[in-house]
Image (cartoon, rainbow, N blue to C red):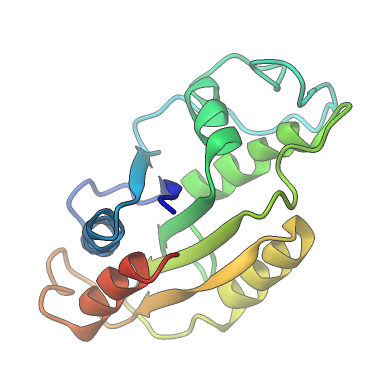
Length: 183
C-alpha cells in the first residue's frame, strides 16, 4: 500500500551532503510507489516554540503562531512516515530541524493527539564531518519512544566535511534502499 512520506530537511545547504541522502531516499521511496513531500526548512519562516501550551490539535493551524509551520502541519497530519534529515551539529540535529520538531508539539495539544502513535513511522538521515552519532541517536530513539513511532532505521554518513564529499559513498545507496524498503 502506498505511503505518504514527509521529509523534514534541516540542512542549510540546498545541495549539501544531507540533501544527497534525501534525494537518494526519495528516489528509493518513489520507486516503491510512495509519495514524498520534502520541506527544506532553512529558508522557511519557522519561529521557535513559545512553550505557551496554547495549541490545539483540532484546529487547521494548531499552533497560536502564524508562520510556515502552517504548511507543514497538514502534511504531517496526513503522512504515514516522517523522515528527519539533518547534518550533525554539536552532536545533535541542526537548529532548523530541532525548532520544527519542537513546534510539532502543537499537534499533541487539545482534544486529540494527532502526532503520537497513529501507526506512524520515522527514519533518520544524517551527514557529518565526524563520526560520533551516539548523542543524536540517543535523542532520536527517545523521541521515537515518546511519539510511539516505528523506527525504520537510519543512515549516518560520517567523513563528509565539504559539499560533495558523500558522492559515491555506500551511505547514499543505503539511503536509497531505506526509502525503497518502506512497506
